[in-house]
Image (cartoon, rainbow, N blue to C red; front, side, top):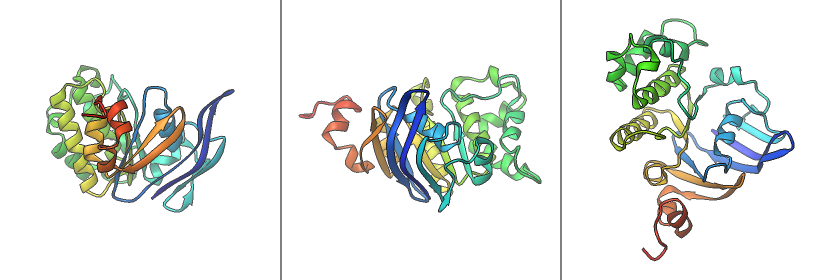
Length: 236
């Protein structure tokens, strides 16, 4: 579904991504792990057209989308849930969700019903403004808003950040349900243990480069991942 080849991203004179290559197959959850500043969020910004690569190529479903504008990515079927949720705080829950379907035509009532079935708390809060939601509810709203665009590929940036453990479990369960419903997921997540238990495959990013990748179940037992990202000793 997604094939990134030798992509380089620069911020002025600073190179943030150094020729990264990876792929995502349809129906997978693929996770990208790495420390703060490794280039994970930049990778997602590149994949949603917010920062075009200086060189390299991005193919989506066989089509070259390397220089596609950000506002066209949703129509291609790629929707991005950014780090920090970025909901519209002065709009109601219902209005936020409607914004997710802004590029679509026709009725969205069936999609709204599906979102409320997936996130019942949002239905209860539908008339509240986004600023009055809890952090977990805002994250659910951000994901729901993206799903209103009917993505084929959903990009998630740190969906568990700042959330209580019980809410994190709920969010990851919902991400699994999204994949099971047919949406491919590319997940950036610092909670490596949760991400690898959920994902099919994973890549580890270090200093703007893809250091290595493997099946998620193999990465869970990889000594490098255990020591650096799971907080375990290699002897443990």
